Length: 219
Image (cartoon, rainbow, N blue to C red):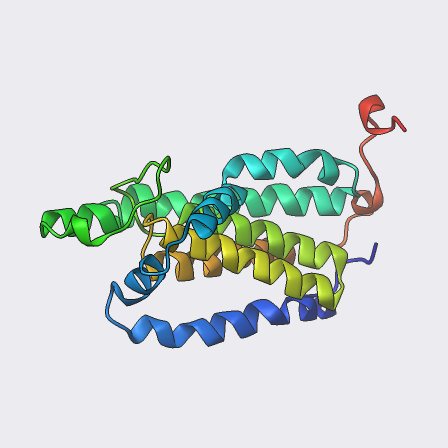
């Protein structure tokens, strides 16, 4: 495993490129991306995105924790700090600054236009706390972290694709607007980069140590 350095951040170039390429979509009318995705429903994609969206669940971060616990302290602390920052970013807006922002279904129901939306059977459509997308923030926190950990260009590209699919699933399933997922992408990446820089400020001797727990050392 490679250490911390500013050059390590070069493995995040797919995230920067993706962010830039998605930016023009912000200038479209609010529901444009939503309806574009909604018009492309098929049984296969319904099942695919209903499963893919679960990767953005916060429980995914807990499921991956045993892997991180095997890493050196610096990677463990980075993971925990990035997770904490991403939670702060999401809740600062969802429960505070943007608490009144309606999700797509609730918005169009107010206009008596909810019948325009195709919903996926078995998926509970939420109505409040739209901004930002928590699932998108979580998945991009995770894929950004593992891009830094793996430090392979192919892995960074693959992880970016996974993040985009999960973010798109939130729109496809009528859970979020495009803006919600776009900002979720930004917050997810930012939480890791910010945590990374905070840890880089001063090297610590304990960074290279590992947890000495019996259940982690079983073969």
